[in-house]
Image (tube, rainbow, N blue to C red; front, side):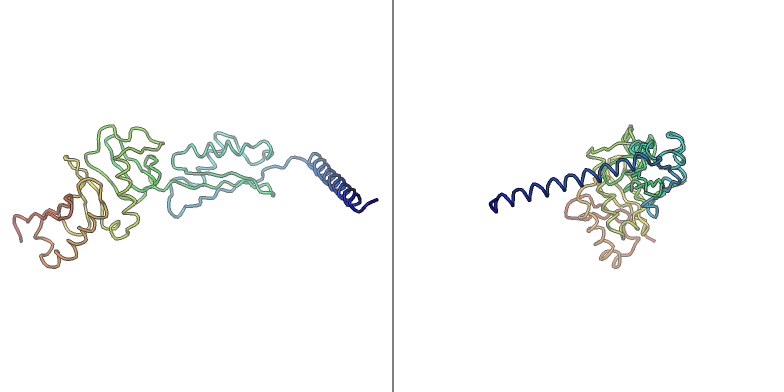
Length: 265
């Protein structure tokens, strides 16, 4: 027999033996699993991955939601627990951005929750809402406030009438841009107490320092307008004092318009 045929037969024999061994181990594992009793869920562990940032939902609430809609999980056969249904149930909560349910080999059910992170709070005629970084709208949670910039004032009637969804309208996008800017700029975030929309539709900033009326205009060119406000604080206030001007208008491109106080003390 030639060397070539020996190599071919050797390869075939190796393939057959490997396939037989694989089939044996698969069958043994199948029979072992089939003869084993179904594993029981003996405990549940809930982890809030961002609990230090948000407190919109508690571990007890998560367990309560599952027990109320799915029945108690502890004591059930793991094979009968629909993990995807648990995740869908929890994800339906507007404050939950993402959930993951899985069972470890020791029979422990693990639920991991990531909450939504609000960027800005809007007080509209029909109630208060949060908006997260994805433009998702969700309601305020009683007794669990999140300290983010607040936009109030003349919000259009019927604005944000539908919660629990994304909203990418122009006004929402601009409000979101303002919230993200403040989140990324700790100094201004600490200085701005409120953003008030006046009757003309211009935003006005309510600040912790000074009592001037600060007209921001629309929510465009955010960086440029805050740069102008920074220049006012840095160059004008040290020279003229806090009381000389009653109004600072930032809405016009390339300039700051200051209105003098009528009665200076």
